[in-house]
Each structure stands twice: as C-alpha cells, then as structure tokens.
Amino acid sequence: MKSFKLYCNANATTATLVMLASLLTLANLVTLPATAAPKEFSLGTENASDFRPAEILTAPHPAIPSELHDHCFKSCCIARFLINPDGKAQVKLLSSSGSEDLDEAALAALKQWKFRPATLNGEPVPSTRRIKIEFAVE
Image (cartoon, rainbow, N blue to C red; front, side, top):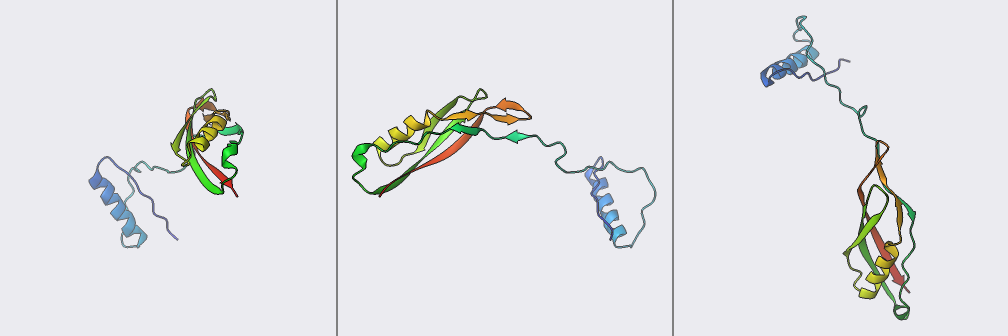
C-alpha cells in the first residue's frame, strides 16, 4: 500500500501542486520527475514538555460544625488553589455550600493543605487546582 505525505514549500500554489501530484501518483495516473526534495515536516511528541501537576501532600478534612449535626443535609462547595513554585498555596471558594458555617469550616481546613508544586521539565512552576468538597449529615 502506498503512503501519502504532505509537503510544504515556499508558497501555497507549490504546496497545492505537490499535494495534487502526490494524489495522482497514489492513483498511479502520473509519475513525478526527480527533483530536489521539498522539506518534510514530522508531527509527534518527540519535543513535548514533561509537565507534572501539583501533588497534594496533606489534606485535612473540614469538620462539620456541631450545630449542624442535628439536621440531615447534603451540600458541596468548590474551591480553587493557586499553587506557587515553592509549594505554598492560596485558596478561594468559587461556589458556596449554601451555609456560611460550612464555607468557613471548608476554608479553615483547605488553608492547611500542603502541596508539592507542579513541574515543567523538572522545574517548579505555578499552577491551579480545583477541589470539590462534599458535606453530608444523615
């Protein structure tokens, strides 16, 4: 089976002609004359970067306030961490649980989380992480 390669030359007209000639050659309708080979581009990941996301090292759970233990409920909130290259993090609630007490408990616990920073090609880089915290009392 014959393969098809896309060649890029100096201008679009030449590239179009090369592609058309390649298609005709594949169909065995014409043979290409021997000329200087145009530059061939390969696509792939041989030049890809090595990115590793930030890792959670410690993650204490939020404590549900005692005054809410008498009620049955399920709720959640979403937080975003901004993690610096030194591993220190800032946290912000993106959505509320619907209870100010639960939001405060979640933030108090999340501020204690510790991270190993994300790395790009082995070097620490800033990153973000979203976390969903679920609460349930049954």
